[in-house]
Length: 437
Ligand code: GUN
Ligand code: ZN
Image (cartoon, rainbow, N blue to C red; front, side):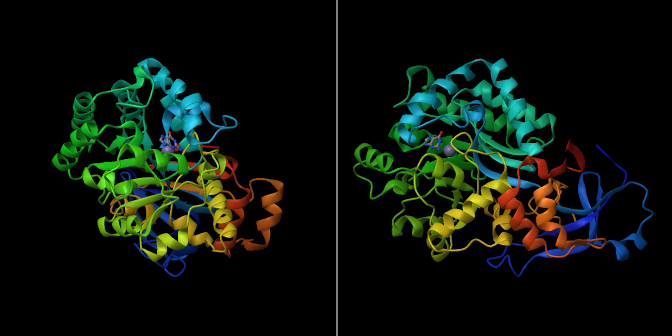
């Protein structure tokens, strides 16, 4: 841990508070200075003003680059890293043919530990400092992921998948073992350093009512743990849930009956929701994870941002690797923009950025720690180079002068269309450099 002050000069952009109007509620310092101390943000402001208050010794000069809060990926699967970009199926066949066989390998803790390293390296090299992660059904694989994140001092939310039917036998737990293993993982990891736990039933088809009842008990016992699952991604999946749970009004009602719809609950996809499901999401302050590259890749459907806005449901961006096709959140934002274009709506560059920084943090009830660069927040941030290749240099150079970046909106937008991990110059976790290009 670094105890001395560290100084970062760059064009600095962040959203200091929860807002429904991110286009009007951002802070931007064209020639800015970020001061960190002891892993936290100590100060932020204009370089020329703030430099008078400090004896600047450790200056990291990122002039001409864009410094933003560390990105938050609200839904992805660590065991699916190696099966990203698997050809040709839609959700249910894709699970059978690729996902379950791959997740079976994680019965070996050493293998899980190996993939956890690659997975976290992918996050950090893409500028993602916090993620909400599905492990496999295996408790020890989940331990391996938490240990690797703890070593990096990351703020990571993760959970052991629970499933006791409709999957291969070796991947099944039981109501009791799911409850017991999840409780042990919560006791061992939730709130330890920067780690947090999410109850993780895979989705309604793979849990029996008995398993959900066991998880409902945990949800009540641990009111501040997170919840993550999939909801209404694919039409065949929805029909299947109707068959398996015939007495429930709709898909979300299954989760609601078992106390899983609440603040800090993130429902992946939400593509084909009924009005009453949107209403319930709103009433219970649950969030929807918008996973555009996954939805396009599996041919699942188009997320309806306008509908989410109408019902005032928090929407957060996510990759959903390995159905998602990139770890890169900027690129994910670019695909979200296109999904909105197909429906005649618009995702502004700043709203997209908000949905993976402050907006995600406030949906997850973590905005006092991450998602912004407010004084006192944990110093997770990323430095982006708008001119990382010849094309982006040409595209953005009109906006960049000696005093910094003139139009951050346009630069962010261009990066969402053209960027990949090559635009990440450096990623910092709790004030420490965790990745450097
Ligand atoms: N629904 C249930 N499991 C999964 C999964 O692993 N990925 C996606 N995209 N959807 C799911
Ligand atoms: Zn998923």
